[in-house]
Image (cartoon, rainbow, N blue to C red; front, top):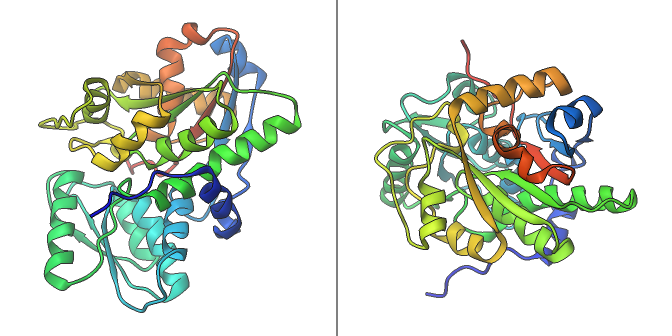
Length: 316
């Protein structure tokens, strides 16, 4: 069997025309106080103002749009945000969606998936445990299993974020020196990287993982699949301990570097977003900011982009 094709800039441009407009056209924010605090010029794409409060609706909607019309159910695993996107896209097209989530998943995200129409089954002690249960369920029920990060369409949908960033900045005569992108399953990073390497090749593409969930960074750095025993980070959206092979193949083509940030930096980044932008951002969504707080001096004076990619914060 031939491996899936890599995400392409042509398909990202196509996705920008097909994705439900409720998910596109998000603000690109800059603020002098944030720039002064970091010592650089930062443009942050705000993906928290749509119906699911995260970027995941882009890839889920584009993936669903590319599937043959059907009334059959689809199965996936999610920490919460991808499941919301898939539920939204499924309801719009009359397709049931079954989401497996970990027993300790963010309750607010679970409730949101159910409100949007998904059937949510709690199984496994973490995201990767839920994914294994979802894959087994799909096989026994003869239903399609969609894995976030494991194919081009979801990445291409996410890549429309980078397309919008470069279009807006090009109109202002601004070029990005670097883009810092949260890295979980890899769809956001590989989609944005595919667009940036085509449209802004001088831009350095940098993924950001949680230090307590380093599987994707270890695998990228060592050029082989490496799993970890745990992924015990506050950033549930990037808490991956089993890498997605397809995403790693894509990363080798479009990613320059992967950084790891610790949980205190993620907490500080959430506070930074509140104080400078007036935004509530979940830990995974603030990973790019966390990297700048830890290592921003390496980009001093440069023009940098990031994505505030979710605001589904766990209930206290």
